[in-house]
Amino acid sequence: MPAATSPAPLIRKEPTQQRSRERVERMLAAARDLIAQYGSDAMRMSEVAERAGVSIGSLYQFFPDKSAIIRALAERFTVENRACIDAELADVSSEEDLLAAFARLIDAYYTICLAEPVMREIWSGTQVDKTLRELELADSRASAESLANVWQRLQPEADPVRLTATAFLIWQLGEATMRLAISVDRAEGDRLVEIYKRMALRELMANSATPPDHRQDLRINKSVA
Amino acid sequence: MPAATSPAPLIRKEPTQQRSRERVERMLAAARDLIAQYGSDAMRMSEVAERAGVSIGSLYQFFPDKSAIIRALAERFTVENRACIDAELADVSSEEDLLAAFARLIDAYYTICLAEPVMREIWSGTQVDKTLRELELADSRASAESLANVWQRLQPEADPVRLTATAFLIWQLGEATMRLAISVDRAEGDRLVEIYKRMALRELMANSATPPDHRQDLRINKSVA
DNA sequence: CGGCATATATGAGTATCCTTCACATTTTTC
DNA sequence: GAAAAATGTGAAGGATACTCATATATGCCG
Image 1 (cartoon, rainbow over the protein chains, first blue to last red):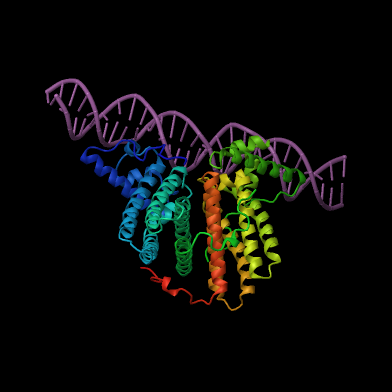
Image 2 (cartoon, chains in turn green, purple, blue, red):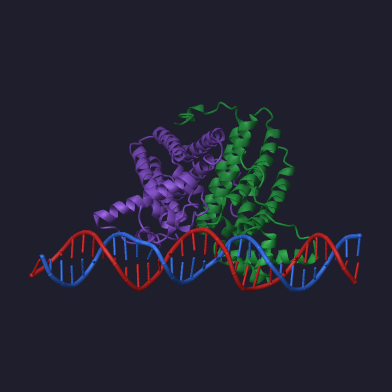
């Protein structure tokens, strides 16, 4: 469990006055627009400042560095998503519910990813630095945790470690699929998401519907090297 | 089908003389060492030159920019892998063969990823720029193509488009799993690879063993937005 | 050998950014 | 209304990828 808490803060100093809060919003909006237009690499700190109508110094008063702005935007996105996910999983009480809810989540996530050029650019940008990656990982673990909890509730006798790991992987692969899907043309993207959905749902079913020792012949050699 | 050919060349001018060929090798070796030690971000062009015992100008005579060196290293890696993949898939003549070969490939790939700090650093580096991503994508498509071909041979009546898409996704998700697995601790990494393997193999079986309209109730809503 | 063309080598210099800092201005507090 | 805290400024600093005029080595032809 490396990097539990963020080493570099997302914001240097929380703006307390009304004026500065508005300015910070303008900075974020400017960054957002610039990223949407040219990608996070091409985003220049000086441009963000200019577009927001503030000086470069003000920018750095609140955001410790360039990646902090990008992370701040990404975080808003993921926070929104978390709410969506928890809402969707809240009233799951059977396996059919779980499968249906998961399928709906995938579709909803795909829709959002397609509609949000900012996220597309952030994730495909080269400046996806370690902190952003860690943020994404932490978020993914949290989302997977929600899924694993519901799942565990439906299958109390399943191995929690394995369930958690599976949920985490499913989630991570879901994100990988989304990034892939939005980077190819729409038709292929749709196809890929559809296939992923089938794979994930199948795994959800397999883990809950059958006793653990089903199909053990597949495990060719458990560990490598 | 965007970005079929590389817009930026991997090398500016192929070294023709013996002397320069050796120097280019030294540059690559130096880059390799520095990346292995501190990651591709921390790699400085000036350091590469110094370590290789050449001037900064010589470096730029052969490599158009920093990412070109990284890509050149990545390409060597993927070329080796391609050979490995094709060899493994060459004498597949039944579905059992295919499943076994695929499982072996995953394990082998995982072993390599664990053993190659260079690749670990390259993929986890922030400077995974568009060109590298495109290179990876193209390579992935090629590998998936090999898989799809074998698969199609075993299942002539299957839909080629879907088969190709599935092979591509399986491959891409395999790479995502590897990157994830080597970025967490070993025990969790092993677990994740194992789960991925199961998912992938299940998908391989499902697509070949059953008629297409199996479990259509899973397709909650086919297209989104 | 001599000389011309081509390939290769050099590293100080340029360009581009991110980031800092000393100082100015506004807002809050008492 | 004055001290304190928060906020604002932009020129200057610093890091580093990359270029270019110039120099040297190598191959080639007579």
